[in-house]
Length: 486
Image (tube, rainbow, N blue to C red; front, top):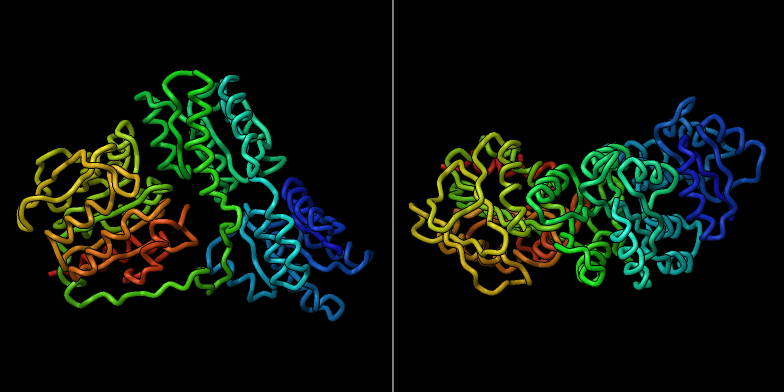
């Protein structure tokens, strides 16, 4: 089989070529649309042409128009591979003539599945590439940490360390040559720290999974929270000492689990076609008229990817929530939750506080469950207050969203509006059921915009979500529901 890869970025061409060669393709390359037309005029007809969108001389859309307008090339299979991931942009590419679309960065198994769907290769191709291990890039200035990380990750057959760097700048330089499946990034490093490197990674590679690996010191906690709000997908706290056995144990129990959650082996994060529905059918539950008119409080649950999601959702509705309290459960250690509240408060322009035992729950205020303690509502619907407990974890979590949600259902009943955002696991499902049974309403984040579609996916699949929405629409939807109260 033959492929033509059209992209102005040499590293991007190399990545696509490597994946296609694993699928037994002979690969030719072109740096722009005009060069691609010259290749097609002089070489054998390819089975697939992959096309980047933004290129000099002739961009991807113009190349597609030319190919679809020429009888000699009209029947070519065209797959656009681009950093654009907005649904409207994807719709434009498909309307122009692309057969399918993949957002960068992508996994090998996703690309293979697209080729199968296009009829370019058989199912055996998918089985071949899904056996490829997850490629992890490690960035940490400590030689000890890098060595233990590399050695421990190498013991898992599903993971391969693709490279390492001693600071953020060296990491960026390495990523310019070849993209891994996930980056494990230290926070405090010389030359360029982890936060600065993360911001640049997000600018260049918006969907590349990044896990922060940081200390639990006060300084490390602040930097990690800043990184999570800036778009890091997850974090793992380093052991307080540098004992290699402690570090290795933390890697096995936490780092590997997070890596596999962010880069699932059999279910890659899909770059959906415009108009596609999530891979799992999601029934929606209509919200009652009473619920939409009488919101008394908003409760939010989130975990992996949550800080960045909260940073987008909360500012979208706080102006409409002046008379309504907002309570948030974010799975996070105690060292981090105070810093997260501080960061979110600056973004929202309204008070965001870490909850304390017995405090009154007031309208227009956002309270965040402290790490390591369950938060629930006590008192009365008119004068609610916070209760914190050290009860056993639920869903392996403390704080647990189910605890908060159940108490909100008891206190506010049909006046409860719940939001379940990106996160690993199923915390929030049973609490959402209780809210719906009490007449309240639940909004869940959709699969495409979730870092991990665990928590919101469970709610959506159960058919108890009144709406399943992209992250960018959730704040607006909550604001609309709050403005209709009265």
